[in-house]
Length: 176
Image 1 (cartoon, rainbow, N blue to C red):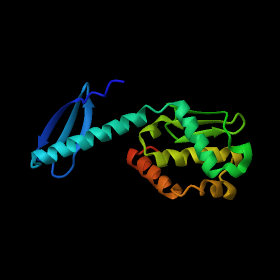
Image 2: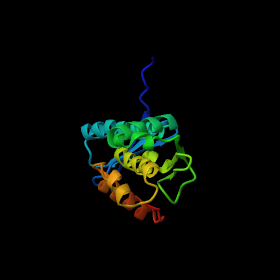
Image 3: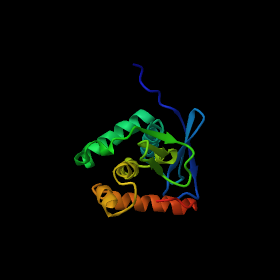
Image 4: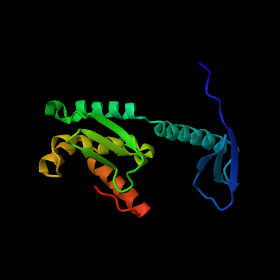
């Protein structure tokens, strides 16, 4: 197997930029924006760091439905194993038509749909949304039993806060 090629990197220094570093792809090239006062060593360190971040982000964007189902099955084993087969979905898939919610579940046909916007979010946020939808296969409403199931996930409140922040920043009301 051939080793991955290191992309062409263009470093742009800015006198206005004080501490932040960012990077983005521009075709085949990666542009890294750094403060002008960074030394060559700091520049080299930050270029490597930003290339790693871009690679991780692009890896998340490559997520597919099979990986999403595998992730859901892992969450069932970790948090809902005592529910028998009640938490087992017929399908779990990414969708691009959910802009007003992070995920949805249809208990009648046991299907779960997850918004493509979660592909760029941290794994622990995706896990929360998946577990939330899996819990709807057991309890369709948002009652105390439902929240007790979801609450088994240690990062529930943190993930809810993260999603509320994303929704507020985008000024798009998102259903919980």
